[in-house]
Length: 285
Image (cartoon, rainbow, N blue to C red; front, side, top):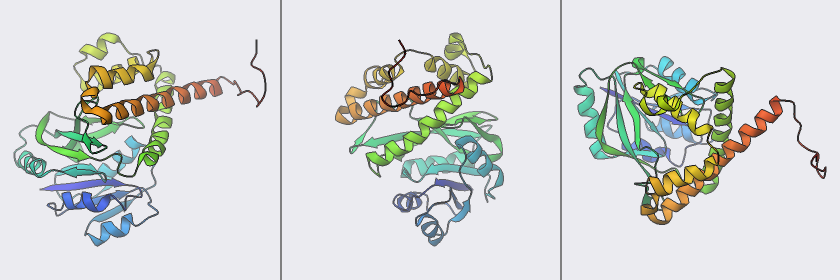
């Protein structure tokens, strides 16, 4: 009754554990972005159907997958290779798909782990839309895409466990270097399109997608964003309660936010024709 979709790119380390956690499904699809390691070999050896496509951006890639992959069942559970479904979540997903009512998608609660610690407080939001009818779901944004279902949404018990640092901090930095470039492009694209935002919309907009847009646009215009991101996660969200892991995670997110600030500024200057100063040149008075 439920198909599984796993997005991959060089995931030979984490994919086996992910496949173990979704072995209950008889229709597992590995949607691969042209891996250069043993990812595809592992997927096929475990009976998964493999579809390969060069990655362009998150929304485009995911929308293409939902439109072109031949899922056997009407419901799809989306999971990344560094995530694991807990037994309780497997049971609640099966129950929801068998009796969804009018709902076309369901959110699940994700637990992120760092230094062996569940980041129970330091996450901006632990809820992610992962169970859905593919024909009733689409995505927007170049990175960190917003899920847009065409119908009512529910919440499910059980946890989806996430290990974003399973490949080490170096991999995390490399990955977020790419994410920050997409974020900068998204910010400039929104401004070029003349899309407006409002503070009231960020707080009161009833449509989740529009409210999320207003919130992001408001945040992108605030001064000292990296410091604000740290304060949000570590103080307001209670990341200090997660100990060393909470401090580390809030600091990493502040660095990531600063990467976005720097790349956005760099792109704006390039667009205006401003050239970087030559090495050793004095700044204009």
